[in-house]
Length: 614
Picture 1 (tube, rainbow, N blue to C red):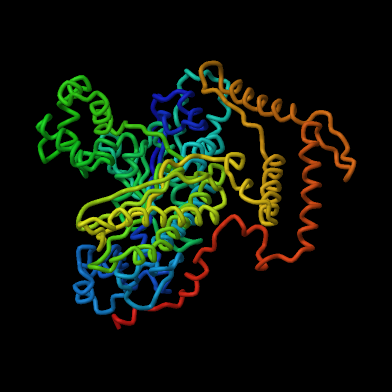
Picture 2 (cartoon, rainbow, N blue to C red):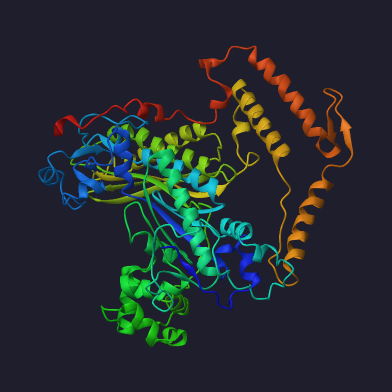
């Protein structure tokens, strides 16, 4: 049954609505956030790779441990605590997909059709990260602000999208833009436009909803309705394009959206209107379920507030003011956060950037499988290859914010202790060069370590574990990298031309950045008109005094003429290079990245159930 509109005087101002269109829309009083995660992600990836249907029961394994269980396999009582043997005993037709692996001595991962041994193989999660990037591309096509929470879940700020829908669908808003920011919004209409309805499970509000169905009273209810339709469309686009099913939670803030996404799984979504937050939290959750409240923090809260096991959220909300929480917890920041969390008011920014501080690749060794320096160095291609693949992914996710490490560190754990050593590395933007440097420096650090044990009664080997880490990441530009100073070979000339073409493309396509102030006063029309004028004036100012290029006759702005002539020069250089023989027949565009094993993975699409389980 479609929801009914029972208009009330709005408690929201025009400021709240306009903020949905800005850069900080997640902090608006009308904010709406979606949390979308892929159902049993690793298992779904393996189902598609093996050509199985969603009805085929499947587990994804790492060695003999289960790391993901498909929903069809869960019907047989299989969970991640099962051993592989116990899972097979519960379901005779269970399909098994092992993760991709690196083999000792090789820098590329692959899928293999036999049970790999942890003695000479290392797990690769690159296939799952690759599929995650495909999903992220769809998110970013549909939504301007997306935060990647993990490989299989993301937060989407739907405020911008909903703002546009509100103006399109509700003339009462579009025709009232002469209002002041501090004026209250008009009442919602008595009838919704045709075709509008919630998509998903809507948590009821005991105070407003009745036996006839859901009741909409204010604009925040309509915001949630429109967001549910948008999230549903995004999820269906993912399923159609990639064949992955997802679950979604929609709420005013990230914490509510995250809790809601897990309530009706799989392949469904849950909507929490603002009026239903208390009912949602008190009925389904404890305060320890909040994202970011770990065991240590929850222990302190339980001890100092004497929190009962039942109705813990209601107990905290009803018995403590914010000042009392500060007094009891002796931590103002924690007190404020807890006060807002139990009321569903804790607002956090949608972090669209991935701020990498460090990156590591590690492995635990079995028995005496690494019993010498040579054994360990033979593993280096695996660790370095793993890290380079992840750097490649990082570049693809944020092409305008290239990060490179300043430091390489090795950590060794033997039966006699733990040891670490590190060194600095130059800033190479070219990942092929960086791969060579990391390999060389890591090998040097390992040999230096081993030499200190030559005359020692304590032995470094056999090793229990090893980790190769990249740390102290910094954002770099082509000017800061040292690639161009390494050599003057033809390869470097080709790279220089590639970078020149790239920079020229950015110069011609880039649009002047316009800073828009947050709404403070005045009316909506003036604000939107001012924003439009700022963009127009800024762009127009950059297109004065066109000149004719002496080589091609194109009319070019004066300030861009030098760059335009450089483009002609680059074209001439490229023609010269094209007449020469290309070494290894490699195209110019391939020189910046090391070879990957993605094509290799595709060759294994026809892999079926592992033969040792047949």
